[in-house]
Image (tube, rainbow, N blue to C red; front, side, top):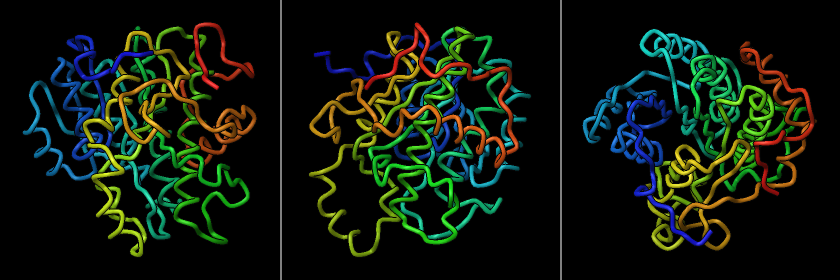
Length: 315
């Protein structure tokens, strides 16, 4: 692929409903803004409604705001119910929101913050909204991962909540690996339906608010180096937008920046870590996620250990 994919390549999105989590700032803002500019009816699903309204005022097109706190499963259920009351279909669910390198803390449900927010919150939201997507041809669930999924790449089933010890970086890596495993297992379960697909993306190294939790010793150097080693949120959002709108995208694919080491550049298909493709671990994670969230997905069952024809997995 030699072309440089940009927002100019986004097809007309009129008539489509897109829900974007964490859309009041950074990557989520740029993703939602581009979708709205191309005609989609966009819902900014955000923790802070006031900031969401301020973000919506900076966008053109049909944009609304929905309260959503991914650190609370009660909030996820309330948000899903509100979305269901206002929409009879969802074309795009963009699981974008996330936290990074947080100090050791837990969600309202007692779950480790990064795993609970980045993975379990989105797992629950997707499960609660999926039946609004299954009847819609071309609908997509896009989950944003990170190159950080390679950090100590493993799902630590023996201590998922990091109760025995805690590493900010490793906990973040686990949550981002979980995002990919969720995508791949979800695609396996969706394939038989032939309508909705699951796709993943990562933004490379983007200059966003996530830097606020960088360890203190690194924060100043990272801030100084940011213009050299990062790309803008608008560029960082392009892999997500391509995964969401490119007519050629297939379920089970993973998009990231096309530059060296996937740090910067225009989006292209990329490959995730070998660990992310381990089917048995994906399926175990799914079962654990159902138990921890209490959310069962509607009529999607994993019945095979490989991606069916019509899906893609890049290795």
